[in-house]
Image (cartoon, rainbow, N blue to C red; front, side, top):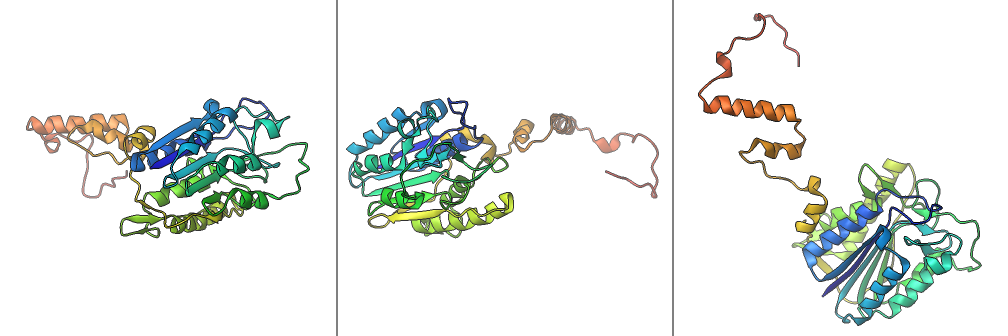
Length: 311
C-alpha cells in the first residue's frame, strides 16, 4: 500500500518568519498527483494545519504500516540554519522544541517499519534572500553539519532527496508556481521522456533527471547554483506508473488541464479568449445558422487593390 504525508507552509504564525509563495502549492500538487495515481492513504498538511504536533501525529500513524508499504513524505517550506524544519507554529526563540530538528526526524523515521521510505525536502538550511531558509541569531552548539545529519536521517531503507547542497539556497519561482525541486519532480512523475521506460518510472532515473533540470533552472532563473542531493538507499526496486492528473489535481489546478473544445463557444474561455471575442464568435455562428453571410455586408469605407490592411 502507498502511504504519504505532504506538507507545505507559506504562511507562518510568527511574524518573525518570512512568508513564502509556492510551498503550499507544492504540497497540494504532490498530494493530488500521488493520490490520483496511487491511491492508498495520504494526508495533506498546509499552513495552519502543519503544526509540529500534527506532523508528529502523522509520523506516529506510520508506525503501524507494513514493511511492504511504500512511504513518501514531502516537506516544502523553510528550513533553519540550525537544522530544523520550520512548522507553522514554530517559535523562533525556541527552534529546537517548536520546530522539528533533523535529529528528531531521524528518531521518528526509525520507528516506521516500511522498507521503502522516500523523504523529499524542498527547503534549505543555508542561503540568503530568496532562499527557503530561516536565519537565526543564536546558533546551536551541535558541531555536526547538515550533510552529516542528512546521512543519519537516511539509511538502508530510507532515501532522502534534498533541494540543494548544504551551502546553497533552495529557490521557489512564482512564474513556475513552485519550488524548483517540486516543479521538476512534478514534470518527471508525469512521464518526462528521459525517465519513463515501458510505461514505468524508476525512482533513481527520476531523481537524476530532476537534479539536472533543477541545476539548469537555478542558473536560468536565479543566476546561481542549486544542486539537489540524494542520500541513502532503499531495498529492492522502486518503480511507479506514469502519473496522471485525476480529479484532485484537476480541481486544484484547472488551468493546467487541457480542456476539450466543444460546440459551445464558452468552452474556449479556458484558453483565455477575451469575452468580446467569444461574443463575436457566437454572433458568427448565429448568422451562419440563419443563412446570412458577412460577405454580403458592405464594408465600412472604401477599399481598392492598393489598400494596405494592417492588423
